[in-house]
Image (cartoon, rainbow, N blue to C red; front, side, top):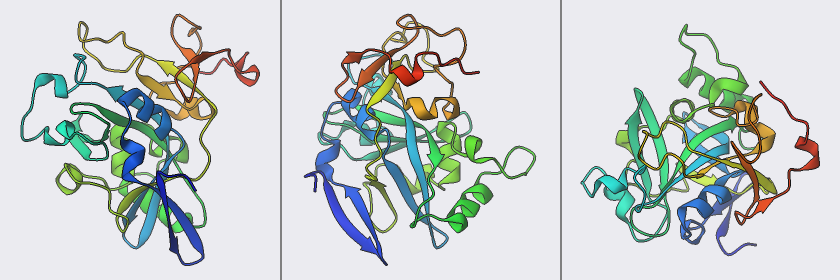
Amino acid sequence: MKDDMQKAETGDTCFHMLNQDFFDRDSPALARALIGKVLRRRWKGQWLSARIIETEAYRLDERGSHASLGYTHKRRALFMEHGGTIYMYYSRGGDSFNIGAEGAGNSVLIKAGYPWIDAIAGPAALAVMQAENPDAGGEVRSLHKLCAGQTLLCRALALRVPDWDARTFDPGELFLDDVNDSPEVLIQTTRLGITAGRDEHLPYRYVDPAYARYCTRNPLRRGQTVPLHYCWVNCDGKVVAIPESFATVQSS
């Protein structure tokens, strides 16, 4: 078993919870490593679960981060020396979920997820997620759209700023599970919504290519090209050749 995981059992099913050591890496490395991990939230008697498919890294030394604005009590979760502290804030009228990385001021925003169904989180858990996050008309959201953005993800998993800001993961309520399904290559591109002049050019956004069409904004949409708009990287962040299976992808 990896050193940064611990094993726990519920019934006949095993979790592989990420330990504190997992988060003690710089924010771009943590952002890549989190892709493919499953965020598990105990709520209303169910384990609501979402696979992380999109992340954004933030650093103290760049102007796109909240931490670059300085320490405040509200931002205290960002200034821990060790990773793993949860930082939540309100964005566009909803909640957003971040995880501290190694070094004060560094963090990762969980930008989007995809509902994860397995022996732990079955149809009943999905039904709770859909009830927590109906569409604007009060109708049930499809799987594709349920967690397709940072506030949608938090709504579907019942993650709220007053409940989780400045806390650490709790094995009985909220944790990250390594389900051994991390992609070998990722899409690397620029972050979304960064104000002009605040290091908007930095390529700190990572997307699981198999789920690209379900993330906040599809980096493989028509008109986007390598290397102008994005590139392919491995888990270490090294640029690699375009995978053959994606060589002719043109998604809308």
